[in-house]
Length: 273
Ligand code: GTP
Ligand code: MG
Image (cartoon, rainbow, N blue to C red; front, side, top):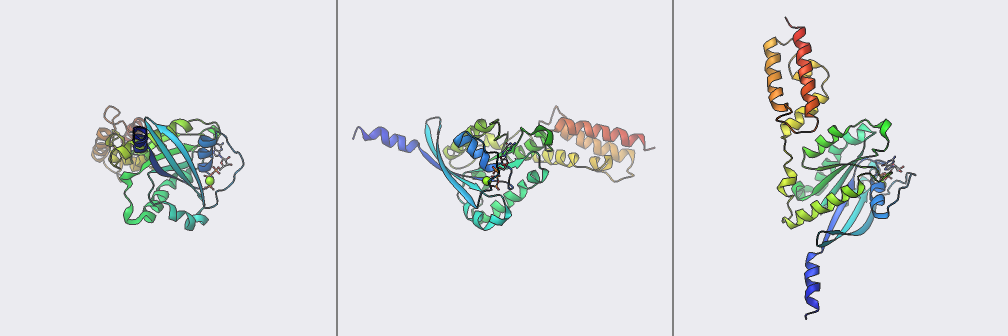
């Protein structure tokens, strides 16, 4: 009896979790997992056919975590195979290639596919999401910067990490944060702990920064019609300045967005009588 007691306690401390990887084909999902589990990098592209499954054991604080990893194929051709595997995941690795804007833009549709396949079971608050901005080693071809990626992730309450499966940069830190958050969530009764969801800035601030980044001219940036009056420009400017002032807004990219808004107002006022 005495001998069994510690074993029972240990069992209580062990956890089994399921994680999945999502993102366009060729962004590096399999290589990230391989880098972490096997400490190696394969330069040749070997597309995942449907799903690759693996198990790894990790230690988080006093718990042993058995992680079941379902590495999904990103190619649309494998949708029918993939869609079976979304359910019952505690963690999702969302991966994009910092050199391919379309792979970043596709993250929303990956979340959409996941929600659709999980159906009524879709409780996104019970899943830890981690965004990997991958291939950061390829500096010259980078087109999605850190501010943009971080903003997309953190405004949704997701973690954000810059990674390179090739050099190993960010990989261990990312997985440690991932497993530790999943453990926190399980210990918190299956809900993501509040501290992780609250990121210190609002969705309105994040959406505004995104809108400013993609605006086509100064009118568009201030959200006024071409030909607007000085008063209309100043009113729109004041509203944005209050929302984005770097003293008040900690969202990634707020400083640049604030500067852009100041410049837009100056250039518009120059041309309005
Ligand atoms: P699917 O299985 O088709 O969905 O693709 P995947 O996302 O699993 O991509 P995979 O891991 O197979 O990697 C695709 C290609 O990108 C391979 O040629 C890898 O060697 C390369 N690659 C992956 N990660 C990195 C990285 O961080 N840096 C560089 N330079 N190349 C990478
Ligand atoms: Mg793969």
